[in-house]
Image 1 (tube, rainbow, N blue to C red):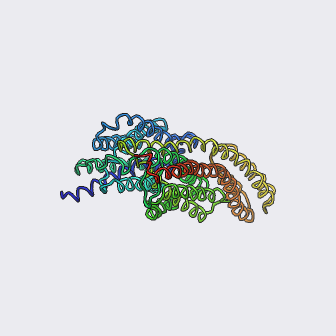
Image 2: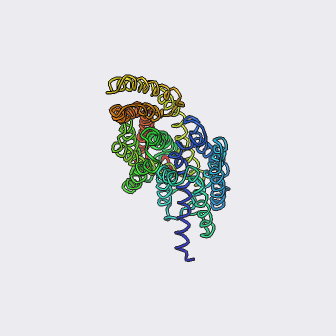
Image 3: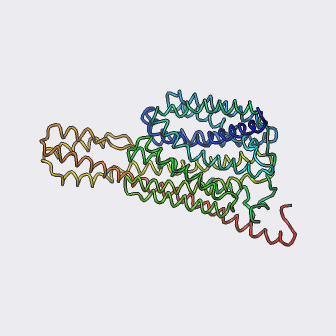
Length: 481
């Protein structure tokens, strides 16, 4: 195989590995409603399918740090892909939530190994700048595309297909990595430094890796609104199919890729802050949706994708631009990003569950008024009202009541006029319930927007610190050499 072809295949295998591991944090999101039903669990418990993966990823990256200088990147990548693939098969075959969560922990360990090993293996450019951009852009795309891919697989097959499909992808990536004879291409960052790095396009100082990672963590926490809350809203509340939800969610990776191409090599402080603001704006637009507004959701998630495309690549490059083993740099950045996702889930899940449990109470008054004022006979109203109350009382926590049977029973013995009125009333009741439950997502989504905006705080501190260090540099007293 010619050297240039081998290099392209090597680069492709590493990019696939990076995208696979980052996508796995969100690829299962569209399948969560189905997992809730098939494995007989609840929304509050099923979030462990995501949280377990992220926690294992964080713990494993921290464990890798002491081995950073001795770790063989090529072997670690192949081993990580092997562990990830085996755990994917185990997750797909899981018969209970407990078993699924355990396999997800193993997946997280494999994902940590391959992500930490991937940075030095991207053979792009002489000075390392292109390696950092490729890693950052691929990571952002993987995080955004996960829900859409998961929705397609869930619709065409079922939730198990999400995990079973990952195993052959991991196997092909591992085989390609072995066949292409991958060798590390990056040993140190293009710029050295302590705090503020000296080189950025146009002479602008870049961010401290610690500050960039802190901003990444907060933006990742806010991103839970677009990757998790939006999915639950689209499927559980607005009753879209997984494929329909995937079509809407696909705007996130699309906007991420297009935006990322426009802001390459820009100031990470300005771009990161702009991304945080745009992501918060998208989440706020979605939070203010009064009901089943698909056009509004498309706009909101498009803004979220733009925010992701602005912030993630720029801040990830800044976080990786430092001296030291590339494995250690990747480990810290991965831990920061996944830590933010865990923070978002921990903060938002109880808020969402509380709001969903309170939703039926908010829906009862308008539904009651609709039934009372409907042009139905008194007997039909009494029968329907009794059935609706019973359906609501027997609905499990955090789920929408199924009002179809009460309407069917009321219509079975009703006259033609009542049956016509019942059809219109059923659509009205469903809309009222959807609006009440949609309102339950407002506070969690606004909290996500706030978490995203908080990323501006460390970025502002980084800007001030950069300004304070430029004066000594101009006088010939460089603090970083």
